[in-house]
Image (cartoon, helix red, strand yellow):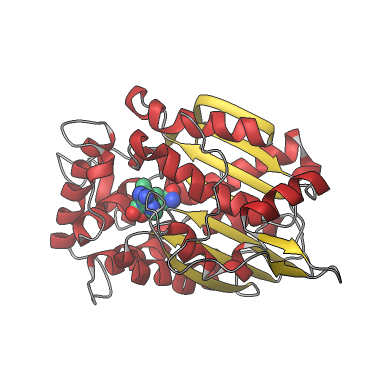
Length: 363
Ligand SMILES: C[S@@+](CC[C@H](N)C(=O)[O-])C[C@H]1O[C@@H](n2cnc3c(N)ncnc32)[C@H](O)[C@@H]1O
């Protein structure tokens, strides 16, 4: 796999910010830079749990998408690379190898799918001989789509020209009852998942929805028919912990944890994951964050605190005969004389086939 093309982060990221604003301009002019700086300050207030909680952020509004990307985009794009690099040290054999040079990754709460950047950086650098990345992108806010297209088609595909990326957009809310149904429409793609990424999304979901989120997530975990690497990274502010810790505990009950770190400072101070001023005066970070340019600019964040987890789900083993009989009874089907499955009796009209869900996780 060829090395990624060398261009500055700002040059690459400017079209992404423009698309988040819905602007057709070629470059961010001073008025848009100014609006973005204000949007950055506003979005950071949400994440510091000042007056407004992250779950209340409306990403359907361009200002919030642009503020979010300018505030955290570069850091978040690097997280998956850092996470995989670390696993390569602690448990290299657990890193999924591309199958026929293809890798399938499902991202929950993907937004602009910045996670894909770090993934490509890792899999291209490590001579995994990846040729195609199949992304399943689960997101409840449709308005992210055009920015996500810009990220994938104008940034990542240009940066990694030999890598083919194919995306399935799954418009689903992880906290809603119809999520499983929506995931099922894309069963064939989701079932192939090698890596499941859950980054910076739980913090935006109220704890009271934990049982529903677990049921939806468990559906993915159950259908996957090969070994699955689950990567989780979430904010660790004290008020965020309750929203995140329940899932870490639930995953620990159902998987093999290979690395977990609470409240870790991740420094972004060396290539290829360096967040820095360009020092040119015209770079994006200079224009948005440098105090030389303006007096009241927001600060450039060059490290990030995160709680992170990596765990492995092995495919569920075949169910026992006894369990199968019990389940067949539940779905009202039994084996006919020739071994075929057949409905045991005609159901009366209006009678529902009741298929009890697995015991939900109790937070
Ligand atoms: C903070 S952004 C994170 C985006 C990306 N994962 C990253 O790390 O940069 C959180 C995203 O999760 C989405 N989200 C929040 N709650 C969700 C839910 N219940 N179901 C699906 N997506 C959700 C939001 O719309 C938003 O795009």
